Image (cartoon, rainbow, N blue to C red; front, side, top):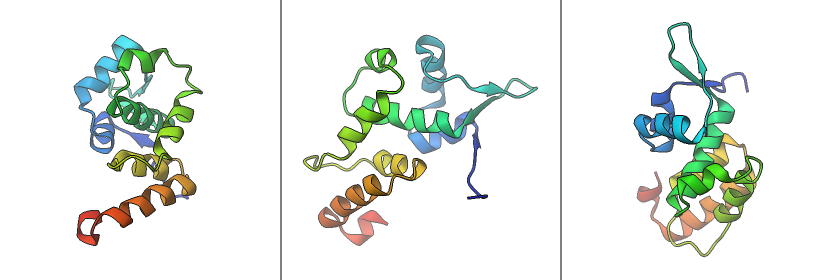
Length: 128
């Protein structure tokens, strides 16, 4: 596990989550959802926990939760909501963020469940 990246820029978060950097900054300022560290030159630096939290928030947001409601949730309840949603098998659309979240959390059960659904409903070319 030596090669696991533990520090991310706002651009990294944007590319991984699909949420624009400007939106991430607004969520930080308005809702206090993330608290990045700063470098000596005042550049935001996010931890792996921040990435996990943003992926959780992104999944809930894309499933229809309002960002203000997500911000009011207890931090320990957010992953519980996400896991419940991600493990539902009745969803016809598989979110790539669910797979990313499972990978970042090293959640083999969630990853396997989503991958099995994905492989049943899509071609190999679509998946890869």
